[in-house]
Length: 180
Ligand code: NI
Image 1 (cartoon, helix red, strand yellow):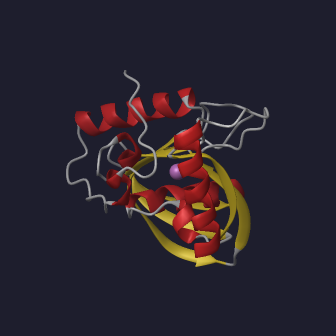
Image 2 (cartoon, rainbow, N blue to C red):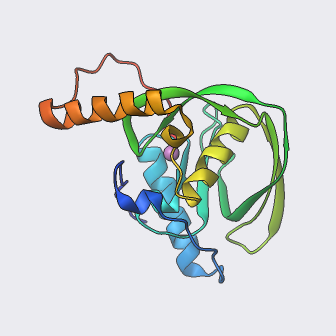
């Protein structure tokens, strides 16, 4: 097991469309294990392979903060096959440092994917799990949550980031949004 480095905006690797995984083998299983470890260490509730520099369609999630480790999802080639309703959720991202914003997502989704032990599964999700799944699958398409904001809000973030890179990070206020 090994921790992987998490890439942050504006890394060009976060903009690439990830490729389908053709063979679910030991390499994929190891990558998923490393990603889960990296996600917990961050700490975050979801992580997509492009965030650790691997442009392949693999995501990991654990939105159960009551019992971490009980409901780990490792999903290969995930696809959203049904959507219903809409929901606004305050999102953050491990690849977008020190910024959160409200994003509009589908309220309920049905996702089809493969597991590392080569089973095809379906997941019905709402609430945080639905939001996190859509956020992670966006990463596979080279999309960050800031790409879903108005250009005004996105420019605000870019200016804030420029200032941070120039002056160093602002003092922490002790609040932390869950990184997905
Ligand atoms: Ni993210």
